[in-house]
Image 1 (cartoon, rainbow, N blue to C red):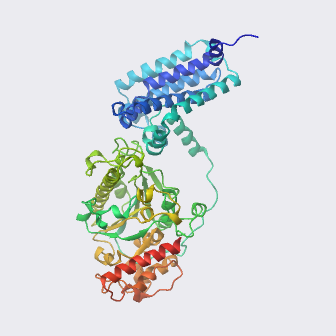
Image 2: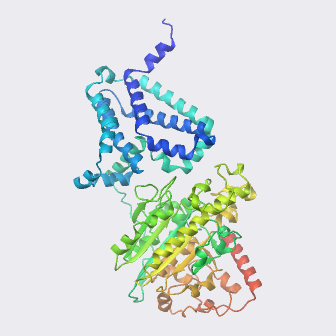
Length: 604
């Protein structure tokens, strides 16, 4: 029996083709991943004591590249495939490094739709030199100079052994920095997109699947089928709804917070609703739920997937709907709508360490002008205050409250540091919402303009020893379910802010979004009938339902009967409840609190 030695094991495991794959891997990492290295060093500066995690991540991406090439490169076909990988990666590496672009499905769409004139416009001597040196020449060497013996097919046993070795090495990289990797995976999607060529190949597979897959044939359940447009206003509606992320009601100075987190919104004529509860404690539940007619008690992801939502109803009634997303995605809400992903520089022109919410406003003027003569609904889905690294959710210029927590493990920061980082992100949301209002003001004379901001859920910042969100709803603290909601109305809208302000203390919830959107566009449906005795309905709809006009000033404060009358569909209309009887201010506040508690208790 031959005695095994390390040299024999190495020569048996590292065949000529596997060594070639490793050579190509190192070439790609050294010359075509400058953008990835740049982003990783910004996130984990070596001089800030994070060199260990930085080196681990670089090694991990190297191993991922080797693993991927090992899976797709076999035998003689590896000559051509590796040459194509080297050539295409040089192109991708150059443009990611020079322009910050990402090769995602949107960019692939643009690439395949580019004509010759646009293609020549992208050429430069710098690009030609880079691609020639790091793409064309090594690809030609692989095609015509690499020995034929390097492309002999390996046995499956050798490939399996090498795959196992790679997996062990990857676990070894991750294990010492597991907490750092958990934060990286959760927080830094943008940085991962610069991994070349792995993310480019992932996007190509996804793009191919999108264009070749057979669409699902299951019909959607139609809702609010009796919806009718009422009124005859000649001006078209232009409404922007901002879906906030991880925002707490009690951190808005509009709602009494002691820090000035809304310096710009306080200069605008807005209403901040004080008693709004979320449908869930996570984005995946709250976002589709708030656009559904199901309500929190009846909502399930399975039901919502095969049922129309508020945007579907608006679209069916000739409203032009656009969804722009700077978060994970629309969670199925915008599947049938015009959808634009603003989480990468491909679309978003305002990106530094990550792409900013305000970048979603770029190009909206062109969209509005292109849909002149139509009602328009625009949804902007924020990155907002997504944790735990709140300090990354705003540009440096918005770091007003200091010191801030710069650790993804919030338990290692002081309460003051956590609060400051979170509050700075709220300050940036204030700026973003103010910019939305400024955009709408430009169309105040030509459209009925409005902005509605509603957060998807709140956040625990250490209260009761809890952090972040997604607690089971039945035991979730109010910090995760009491959310901010802000309304701004233009001068041409059907009712004024003064008419809405008396309702700012009504107990509302995500359940109310469906009917609020319909009434904003002068759409009447029996689905929403029971809402009109307390919800601020469109005057045209109120007239159609034979309800009295909404008073400009409240004749009387809210009464217990009005608060308790906040029920789900099925209740009879009582028009007198729009003008409740008198009550002293202290009693009114107590009634609101008690009603909100009863409603929350009944819901759970």
